[in-house]
Length: 424
Image 1 (tube, rainbow, N blue to C red):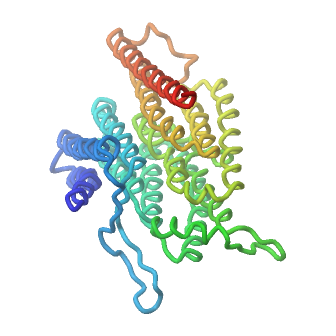
Image 2: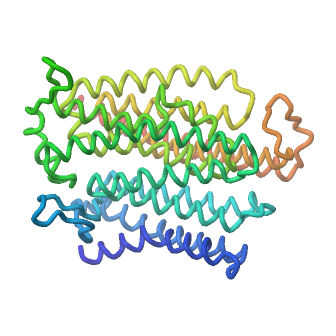
Image 3: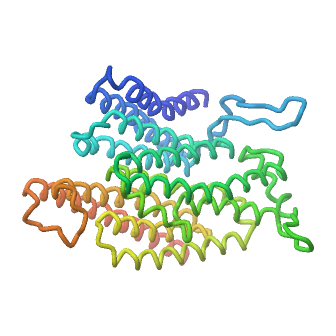
């Protein structure tokens, strides 16, 4: 287990090292050096993520939960200690592979997409910083580290949506995303504070161990009205998830985020950051399972978003906004799974959605570049796109559809096996 601790440290910090080198030493390393060092860092993280996934998904290694160091301690003033540590289990392993795999592909894709951009090194520095932030979020073993990763991915999202800061629409989109997420994060930090006040700790293990005790606690929000503490805490945490995962009514920022470069839409606003809320609800399932009100709220809001944002996608004409509203609908489906306690199904959909939605955005980016940055589907003429670019996009889409169908067939086979075993 000591070896695993160092593996996890390298896994998380490798993208940060690439970010620092590409950002602070951009003139020394140049354009080619920036993408090489960042791709190397994310590549190392992917290889180590696959090894970790093998340990926890195939070899059946027991969950790893260890503090790396104590960040702050109250000493004699108060008995709270805040740690930085790692919790790795099957859920974490799936998220690690998903984040690093999609991030590596987006890094490679961006070499061609951003080739003529003046902010080339800055772009690669940002997306490596985002990968580090997301890895910190999914490996956290306490609410403090979770909140650090939560805010860090929000900050980098703001920077990347407004990457082309000379465009007024990009500035407005980044500001809208930042402000809407602050609404969600306000509820999120209130929920964390409530858990700290009643559980006396921010470490997952200690909070989950005190779940039954917390289930009997009540809090008076207004005179003569007592609410279960766990219900209030879970609802506040879910407000944070509504902002980060763009759930109704805090979904309005996601379509505006399409003002950033297309690779960012694939990495952050389809595959990784917007799924952070789904991941958080799955991680907090020991708390949510004690609150029927919280689970029902997750179900209703998820179902509402899945239906109505899917309908909105039909009337969009901007190719990226169509995919954005489709993403909102799929995130709603994931939340519905969380609301009915089908956490395995929700995370399975999260993983497959990350792959095929990133593919959709990257294919859209290929079309947009070939059509000289035209995004209105009504103005797209197939004859304008060169045959080589069209062929590459078609091959990529066909491969993605085949892989997606294989996943669906695998799921169907698994469901049939479960039914057969239940019958027997």
